[in-house]
Length: 110
Length: 113
Image (cartoon, rainbow over all chains, first blue to last red; front, side, top):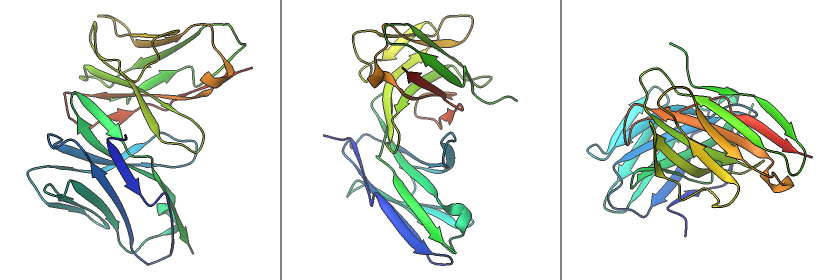
């Protein structure tokens, strides 16, 4: 099965609302969890990351939370804007490298 | 400080030809990763290399695909005898170390006719 599962696959919110994307991972040894944003036709861009020694990290309108016991982590975007519309990927370090979730297509309606 | 570079950005091949994709990591990065992305899908891990070594190739098909990261020069992903199903975007990423942030190149979009 997949090492990293991501939900939902699509998410539509109204401008100004919050968006939450959740991921679970299977390897208890994973200790690094980045999030990437990919706009149409462009490369994935790192937007925030968290290591297993912290439970939460925030950068302006973006925050990530990590629950090591439950092996899940979440991306929270507050006060969403149309330019937040993109595909978001979570990832978790697995053995020697990284495994990505299948992505969440976020649409922010003006 | 240039980011991860990939070339070509677009590559068209006919079935049976060879495709060679190049990736130059960010300065100071010695870890390179290759991913494949089909339209409307996620990033599928293919291979992880350090200079002159393949660390993990578990995501790469055993036939027709190979990768290298020589002591000098870019990392190369080579696809022999391409088939239509190889059409995809191939992204390279680099990082300064194990379990560190990976930074992606612009990708090579391969189209097999």
